[in-house]
Image 1 (spheres, rainbow, N blue to C red):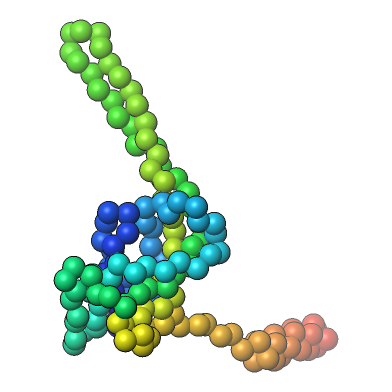
Image 2: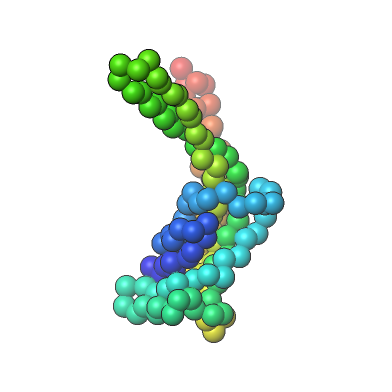
Length: 142
């Protein structure tokens, strides 16, 4: 399974195709938009790895923005004993939820791609019809 290490928001993330990750909030981004990360520090798979110095030029990761949101509230409570001094503060970190679609190498080749799940509707319809017929037959026989 191929992976890439990207840098965004001052942090580094190890990503794989089809994975959903939570990163620092991206400014001026709306849901269902395509994102492209060009700061790739390394990419590879179980056998081969390529490391940049500091980044690999030409490599990129494509992703879709799912949503922007805020995390749970973190409470900060400071108290100084015997001085009747206390302070309570809260913080909600903003984040962006992204789904990684493709990982490209420096040559422009696709290293890994999200697997599409295809449901065969015809087969499911046949199974549902058979179940309906069986239940109808059971009702008629009673």
